[in-house]
Picture 1 (cartoon, helix red, strand yellow):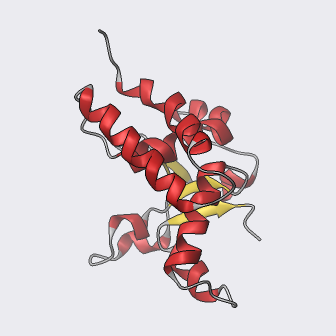
Picture 2 (tube, helix red, strand yellow; picture 1 turned 180 degrees about the vertical axis):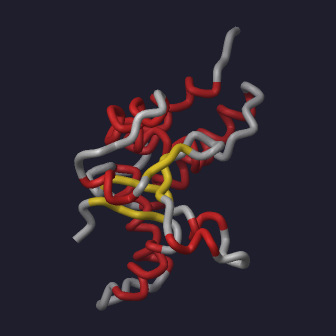
Length: 155
């Protein structure tokens, strides 16, 4: 059976939607476990989280990703301000002024760009909400999210 790593993308978004009722992160964790098993079975070494994020990005930013893959710059829209690029794992990331820092982690230097409208993004926000003990004020949760992600449209 022929398998290509981009075959994971349609399944990742479907798994996230199917195994998570509403925005409960435990369903997202279940989807990640299933995706990890499926990818291992076919010999993929990719991180399932990256595959889910890529699926979400492909659904939200397909035109922009296609432009970047063709070597074109993004000149219009909210992404143009972020100076986006596609990293070695195929993720859409943002350049930042932090990239000059030597001891700063890669994910913080180049945060992953996601859309607030994506189901995967809602699951990530729900996970952080639970992880930081349901904060009444969202400052801590937002600060932690922004260390790894830029979420366009997050209020």
